[in-house]
Image (cartoon, rainbow, N blue to C red; front, side, top):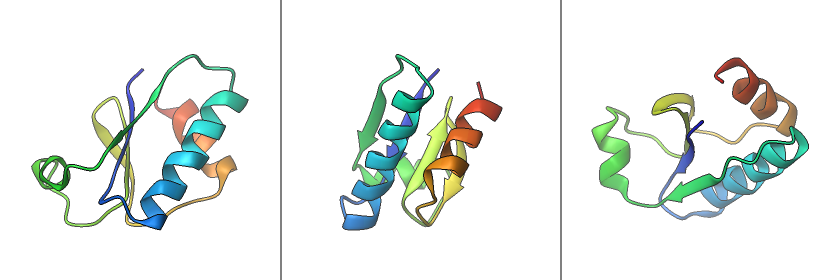
Length: 79
C-alpha cells in the first residue's frame, strides 16, 4: 500500500503526517508514510488545497487534518 501526505510543509501538513504515521503504527502496518512537499504534485492530482492524504495514489482527505481514528478508518477502507 502506498500512503502519502502531500503539503507545503506548514504546521497543518506536518501534523497530518505525524498522525498518519501514528495510525499506521497502531494498525501494525509496515508501510512507510511518504511526506511530499512538492506543490506541483498536489496540482497534478487536480487539487488546489493541502494537506492531502493519498492512499494508493487516490486522495482520501483534502484540506484539513483529522483525528487518528478517522485516518485509521481511511487506511483500512482503502487497503
